[in-house]
Length: 203
Length: 203
Image (cartoon, rainbow over all chains, first blue to last red; front, top):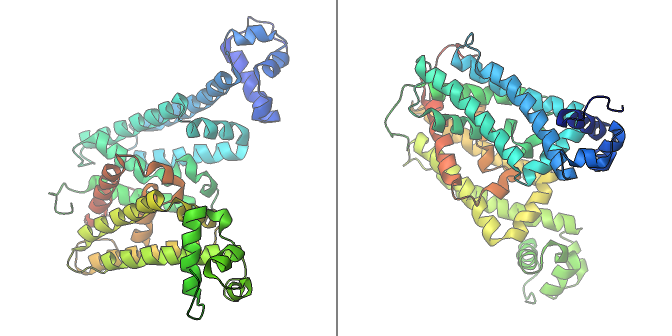
């Protein structure tokens, strides 16, 4: 697949993703990508100075696609905030389940970045937390949630659902009971967010 | 430390724990333990036929101690169920944090068993879930919790706090903010358990 048009970063990333998929992460070097595109490796180096930079950029592209899909749910005003929160949490799990199933190589690349606390992985967590905060804030605005601090509540929801989005639990996501477990946790969380505010009697 | 009394399983386990602590898991073989006790390895084999069996038994002994400590909190009727649940969840985290800090070798042995889905690890999870269910049931009895199904609610609480007890998150437990995170999640969960039951408007 020799490039006819001027080489841009996006064409490089599409080719890298293809190579990752077909041949695994070890094969996706700058030289491999240049060969697949029919260009000099200097042309690729101009955009991505290392295999690590390439891998980060490919993972970021995948995560940004997920973020954009989830943003549509987070902003969907046709769903009341409680339903939207539940839908959003299930969508996060589904997107990750699909990736493991269909793109294990890319998923593994993400795992390496997350383990290394790469800015790509921490940036993705911040994106998700931002969307969650927006849903909670919408719920506070329309009176469905009683929480005082949307950001703190979103953080609690995020931590309470770690089993369903934190990479450390990836091995459990193919379990047939996992959606039911998430449903139960969603039910508990939603009751919590919708509860009338009480004093600190439970602290 | 040569044994003067007849060799029993407990003396073997105490010696094994000592060896694990001082020399790491690779050193805690049946032969090492027999040498430390000044007995023949046949005498140890009579109780534990392999290094794996020894490791499982040592880990079970540690987990059973934790279970017993936690059982005291779970059964403490001087604390109302909401406070008791919070205290119990914090105690689970503290016990594991202490183990990582003070007994990393034993903790690593537990990690291996959990990863292998050993009966020791799954039995421990069942023990903890049983205690949680008892706290929730007490709360239903005294009217502090409104949940209909104590077992399902306990399961949801357990999954919603995975970040604070599931081994996959052990690397996060030394974080200085981890107790605050658990507090926030406890607050959300307790609001959920205490909420007046509503229809399935959020489903």
